[in-house]
Image (cartoon, helix red, strand yellow):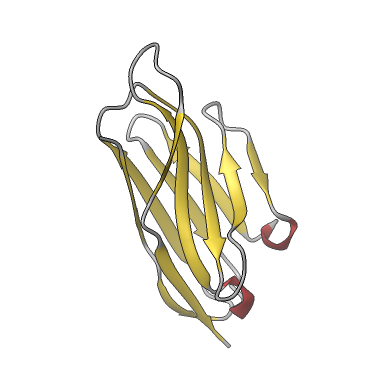
Amino acid sequence: QVRLVESGGGLVQAGGSLRLSCEASGIIFNINTMGWYRQAPGKQRELVADITNVGSTSYIDSVKGRFTISRDNAKKMAYLQMNSLKPEDTAVYYCAATIVARLGSLPSAYWGQGTRVTVSS
C-alpha cells in the first residue's frame, strides 16, 4: 500500500513563504515523477510544478520565480518552497507521484489527501 502524505500548509500573509512537504511510504520500488497540484474553490485542479527522478523541473507560468520544487530520493520526499505568496495562490495543494511498487510492475499514479494554503491580502 503506497501512501503520500502532505504537510506544511497554513495561513500566511501576502508576500510570505511556506514550504510544503510530501512523504511517500509503503511498498515502493521506484518513484518516477513527483508533482504538486492545486485546486482553488470553483476551479479545476492544475499542475503547479513537477520534478523527474533525475531532477528536471517544470512550473506553470504563474509561479515561476516564486516557487521551487525539489526532492530527496533517499527519503522518498518532495518539497515545494513557495515564496512571495499571493492571494491567488490560495488553494488545496496535492502531492502526486508516479510510482513503481515492485520490480517489473507498471507505474501507477498516487495522490495525497491535500494540504490547504490560504494567503491573506
